[in-house]
Image (spheres, rainbow, N blue to C red):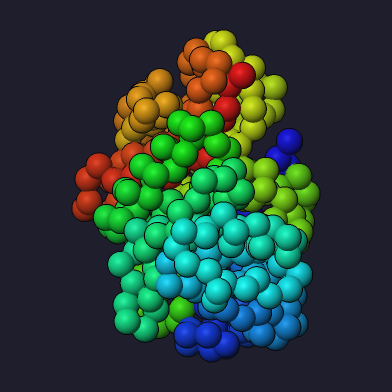
Length: 322
């Protein structure tokens, strides 16, 4: 059971790769953004972790973004270097296996990013047959994720993997490189943890358990009548679900007004299992949909951000009915 939800940024770079942040300034800026946790994922190096770990807050999860010619694979908390330079696009399974053998938790970053001549390989081109080795997928990337058209393709990819019966955790990564040109909103990945205080270990446990919500605005959670939440497996049948919204962090940071207007419970083949409209931002909402065995259910929050209508504001990890 999740005791608390924490605001985290899971994709960051410093001067140890191609970022403008020093590790210390990254942590300082994260505090200013009211972030509880940071995953430091410099390109092909963990050399900045020691400096960043000198800061007491936010919590630090060490990682590395394997920046290859065929895709960018963030690996969280590996014990040693994961070699990728001898592999081609047909060997995605071997790359995932190497990351896991190193004790790491591998994911896929911005799978449909075009990339640049400097940062090549941003588009995911690896062939992967053993997709259950993928722990998490960045369904949202960049500072204003609802404006990034490639994120719609990333969400569709995540849905297709869920349709295949895979339990893959959705995350958001700002791909944070510099303190300047840092657009709001305060989009982040909220991690549901079983602890009252956040540590790197607790962050990793939440990602591996699938306890995540990505949001450009409020903390948006879904809890069943027996305390299970996004990422958990739940008995099929009619279930009472409690949806909660907290604007405490986003109201302190965001410069544009966010109006939540619609809640959708998405299921297999991107079908809609439940939908309701709001007249104003609610703090809680209850529903009793029928959950079918073998189906997944992800809650989505839609509404207005500034003057932009019909925007996807938040997405929860999936509940899995059995």
